[in-house]
Image (cartoon, rainbow, N blue to C red):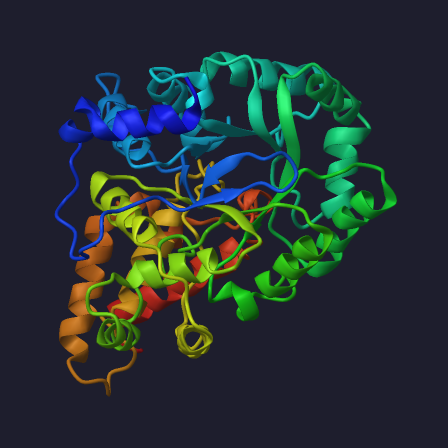
Length: 442
């Protein structure tokens, strides 16, 4: 059965009825947008499923486990509505993401979807461990081949990381052999980092040392022109360089770790004024999808509501006009005025050896800043109320022993952060802020 025929049958059958979407505010029936890979002809859905944020539940052992029933339900809905690209990693969700994705997707014909996973050999890049990781991925995903295989997070150290993790250990030659054997269809890399390191990786392609079949970059309307030039390069640059070389582009963080789905009130009001029937998040998705060089953009949909909403966005896809692009650039400049932490909630920094809930602390702080519910000074209107609300919600969201003031600045987290955030420094800033609130000296 062909991929296209299967999806049509699925959408028309019992599965689609069981997973019927909420009534759309738009009149035309939804039809997923697809992009054809110019190098291999793959027709991938423009919206892909990022499997880094599957829902978790507490098991009888007291540990967090992926809610497989919920994952199955979401994958059923995604498949019925045309999403055919699924991206995971051995490193996601305490090593559980691949198996959850494999269990859900293996209920469908293998040629009805594309699988992307990664060689996440950060801790042990020996050839033995790296090969075991690849073989385990095939087992977890219930497959004998991977469509898109990524060298994971070639970021701050760029070519040096590539050399140590994939060349010196012989893994690149081994992966190319797996490609010749049909066990890998496409080889690429994911990138967070500065421009010089990105250039060094593309130089490998230009030199003919390796031909990248695709590259995954971080791209959204804030990072387009306002990335931290020291730690991360503007997406306008990475996009242009890849498009110029004809390398298919996959996109991560179109919502900047969810922050572009929950923007400050003044920005949200401006967006809703222009597009009252569309969500704030849809602006971010449409920004990325409006660039023709994008093969697929990922969304880590952790529940049915964003999944349904995003399927509607791409089922009624409306590219942005240049005037709307200019509007988003103005909104990006406004976003940069807020003192948030550039955390995307990827949780690569976890577990902290001292038990600090790093992403939880940053998420609570960022939400308070963007919602305008954090106390800034004693001269501020409603300062007492805002102060009490922040301290109360902080203690409720983050257990005392896991709060920012317990960081001992060991630096273990920093080397794992793809955004190169100076995590101990940011934790200290938030801990100092909380202490000033408590002492009423802000």
